Image (tube, rainbow, N blue to C red):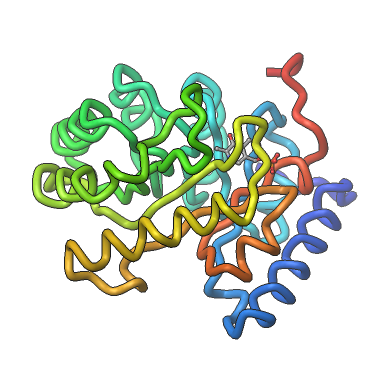
Length: 242
Ligand SMILES: *Cc1c(COP(=O)(O)O)cnc(C)c1O
C-alpha cells in the first residue's frame, strides 16, 4: 500500500506517545524498547494505520473480530496484530482463519476461549499463539476478566492444558469506563507475583499489559511491559465509521 506523501496528524501523535513512553520507561530504570506500544486502531480507517506503518510502526491492536477480519488482509503481512479485550469463544476460528499471523490475543479469560483458540491453532497449523490472561482488577461484575483469586488456576490450565498457546502474561483494562487507578495496577502486580510463585516462572516470563491513553505513563512506571493506546494516537473513537 502506498504511503501518503503528506503525514497526517497520527504520525506526530505517535511520535509524541513514543517520546512519553521513553521518558516513563527511563524514569523506572528501563529502556523504551522494553515497553511494547500497541496502537489500538479500532474504528479507524486503513489509511491511518498505513501512515503509521509508513514511518515504521508495526504493532497494532483491534477489539472487534469483524473489524480486524476486514482490515488485516488489506494491510502488510508484517504488521503485528494484537487482539485486545474480551474475545467471544465462538469467534476464535474466524479470527485466526482471517488473521493467521495474529501476534497475540490480549484478553483470554475463560477456559472455553482458551480451549477454542488452542484447537484452532492446531487445526490451521500455525505456530503457537501468545496469549495474555485478562484480569478484572476493578471488582465490577460487569467487566470481563478473571477474578484475581482465579488467576493461578486459570494460568495453570493455559500452560498445562493448551499446548498450542504460549502463556505470555497478564492484562487488565482497569475500571469499567476504561480508566485505571493505582489500585488496579497493584492488583495486577499481585496477580503476577502469585502466578510466578505458583508456576515457578520469573517475572520476565510474565508480561504486564496495563495502561491506556489516560494512564500509560503511570502504568509503565509501575512495571507495565505493554501499553494499549488508541485515543491519544488516533483521536476519539469513531463508531459511525466502523
Ligand atoms: C480501545 C481499547 C484500548 C485503547 O483505549 P484508549 O483509551 O483509547 O487509549 C485499550 N485496550 C482495549 C482493550 C481497548 O478496547
